[in-house]
Length: 125
Image 1 (cartoon, one colour):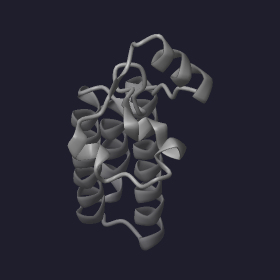
Image 2 (cartoon, one colour):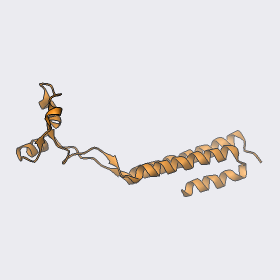
Image 3 (cartoon, one colour):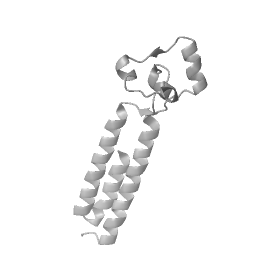
Image 4 (cartoon, helix red, strand yellow):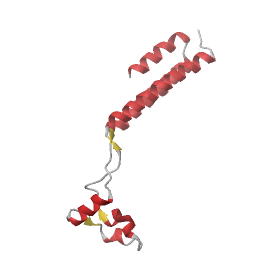
């Protein structure tokens, strides 16, 4: 027996909710917090001789107000870095999205009796 429009809408909403929870969990599991230095920490590294000037090709593009952007003048890359994700994150996201698309297609083409099984199968991923 085919599903009504309301049943399909509910099943898709349920799978979408599960996908969002899975993506959120993957993001939390794979998140790597970045580190940003304060101006005081940057000055201490400069005074301590622990950071070096960037190459001239980078310095040539700076204006007279380079001191406002000291991070462009000195290379702090060893001490600070942006937020990022571990390598498995992209694979997990792709797997979740692929399973989500498959579940949505099966719901749209399947019977009412199949919807519960499709949702359970997606939940298990």
